[in-house]
Amino acid sequence: MSIKSPEHIRTINPYVPGKPIEELERELGITGSTKLASNENPLGPSPLAVKALRKGISGLNRYPDGSCFYLRSALSEKLNVGSSDIIFGNGSNEIIELAVRTFLSPGDEAIMAHPSFIVYSMIVQALNGKSIMVPLKDWRHDLEAMASKITDRTKIIFIANPNNPTGTINTCEEMDAFMEKVPDSVLVVVDEAYYEYVRSGDYADSMKHFRQGKNILILRTFSKIYGLAGLRVGYGIAGAEIINDMNRVRQPFNVNSLAQMAAAGALNDQAHIKKSRKTNERGMKYLYKGLMALNVHFVPSEANFIFVPLKDDTALQLYNDLLKEGVIVRPMGPRAIRITVGLPGENKKLMEALKKISPL
Image (cartoon, rainbow, N blue to C red; front, side, top):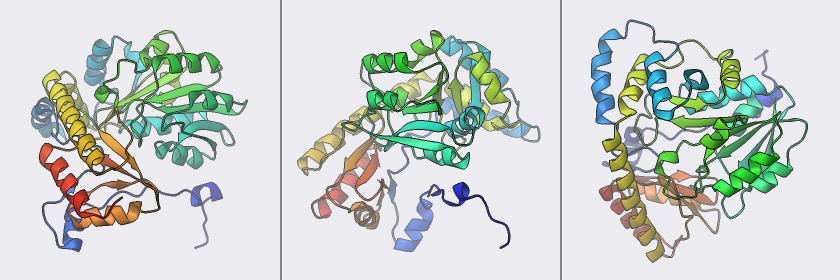
C-alpha cells in the first residue's frame, strides 16, 4: 500500500467492541447468555420513548431536524437553560470529539484521569494532541494532582463523574476547589453519563459552575438510564459561545429523527427513571453482598456498574470462564473487570457463575 496515515493515527489502539450475544452463543454452543458488559439499562427503553418511535417511523423519508428543535425546547425547559446553551450529538461520544476538534490544536495537551473513559485519549491522539494521564487516587479522580499538571499547552481537562470504569465520584468541595485553579484558557469537560444513578448527597454540582459562567462543558446522555443506547443521542451544556464554536465543526443532521423523537418522549418519563434507579439500587446491594461473601474486593459505585480489581493478570481468564457460564462482563485491562448491574435473575446468574470459578 503506497498511502500511509500519519504516525499519530497508526498508533491509536482502536476501541474493541464486544461480539454480538448471538455470535458468542454460536461459537460456545450455549444459549440464554446474560450481558453485563456495557452498562446498559436492563429494563429497556422508556415506554414513552417506544410510543414516540412508533409514531415517527412513517416520516423516515425526511431528513432529521438539524437543530433538534423539539428536543432542544423540552430540554431547555427541563434544565432551565437557554436553547443556545445546548448541543446534541450522536451519543455523548460525538460531543467529546466535537470539543476536541474545536478547542485542541496539534501539540496541545488534554488532562485526564487513568483509568477513565478510553475515548478521551483516543480522540485527543486522533487530533495529534497529547494526553496527560493522572493516576486515580483511591479509585477517584485526583483533582488536585490534575490541576498541578496544567500548563500553557493545556486546552481541555476531562473529568468523568461518576468515573467509568470505577463508578466513583468527586464531591462538591473537591470540584469547587478545582475549578478555582483552572485558568480561563482551559475548557473543563465533565462527563456525567451516569449522573442519574448517583445516590450521594455530596455529588459535585456542575450546573452551578455553568451558571457562574465558568468554561465548563457538561456531557449527558440518553443511552444509560433512559435505555436508548441503540439510538445514540447525547447532549452537552455550556455557555453559548462555546456551543456556537462547536457547532461550526458539527456535521448537519448528526442526530437521527427517531433518536430525537425517542429522547423527547423519554425525557419526562419519571416513572421509568424511578423504576430504573430502584432496580439498580437493589441489584447493587445484592451484588455487594454476594461479592463480599466470596471475599471479592470491589470498588463501591455510584453508577450502574461495579469495578472489580484483581490481584493478578487474570481478567481475560475470568472473562472467558464467565463466558462459558453464559455471563458476559467487560475486562478492563489485565487486572480488572467491570460488571453491569442487571435484573435480579441476571445478577443471580452472575453470582452462581462466580461461585463455580476458583478464587479470584
